[in-house]
Length: 177
Image (cartoon, rainbow, N blue to C red; front, top):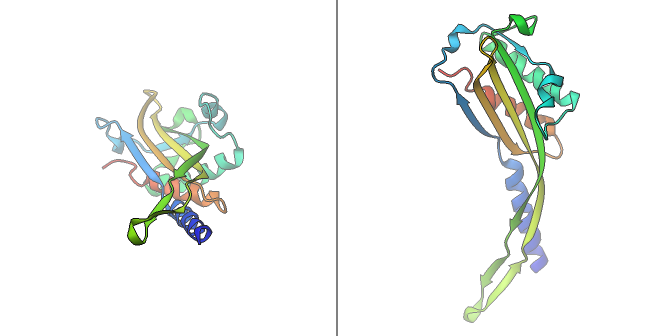
């Protein structure tokens, strides 16, 4: 009986973790008029990864992020410049993956005559959390004018789906109105 409750508890926690969506935080310079910008360019992946400790340097992930960002930026009226020198905006991004753990405390029930019984032991759940940071930089001023951060639990079966969802949710509020 105790094993059954323990198993049910673990399954419920795993379901909740797998259903959790991306948490997005956005910050931007309110004095900037984003309507003045027309073009963007990605900063070279080698340049942007070098100064970020813990950043994922997988070229496949970098390519996936660029493929997701490009059509979203174009759908918002920006066109991709041919070089960094001709772009109005520079898009800098990086991803980090961290192993995390959560402790689920034991559960207790009260039976007949007030007897307390532990129905499931406490246990630790291991999971991987991904963070994607997208910075938009004014090329001429070399100042960050917008930043979006998405954080969520990675799906073990399809982490690429997390990436697609993260990029879409982060860029949903770009440019600010």
